[in-house]
Image (cartoon, one colour):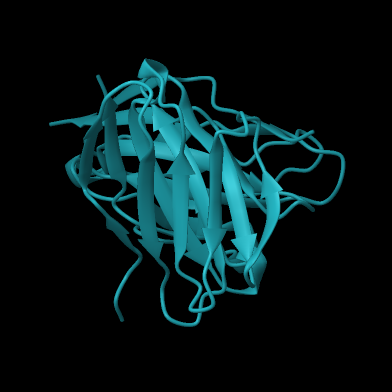
Length: 108
Length: 113
């Protein structure tokens, strides 16, 4: 079975502060991990995937297989980063399992 | 490039009726996924279609069913609607069976009264 846990439902930080959204997963094989973002009144969209090792909008995420984590980080939060963030895992069954999401609010 | 399109945007049905939701994937995408996003329950996987076949289904009763057509568009049918079926139903599509992630549509808001 595959499971994704996002322990924080709500997270507030001030503009310019670092932000880290936590994601832990449970999966026996080699997972593929993703972060999705949903801005207010917009559709869910892919933010980044671990296989690409890319940085999108200043966000990065590193897969830590030892800790089974895939935390999303940004050194300096911006107000436009306020959104709902979902961590997701794709296993051998090839469908995404989503975490429950973290609502990030960046305060001015 | 046109994105994933879903119709209708909103749907209101009476308990016991049937609902049909439609999804057109991005051109070139052969996989279609359906998710239910109910209030407080997050995104729950419903069904996955690839190349016209059902590849996997989530933990939902058989009254949730669907199909994928030769042009890769898909239909989700929900029979004998119950009040708790009220939710946002999201469709996503992908190429290469989702290796590169999914692209989501805007969803169909189903309300059962």
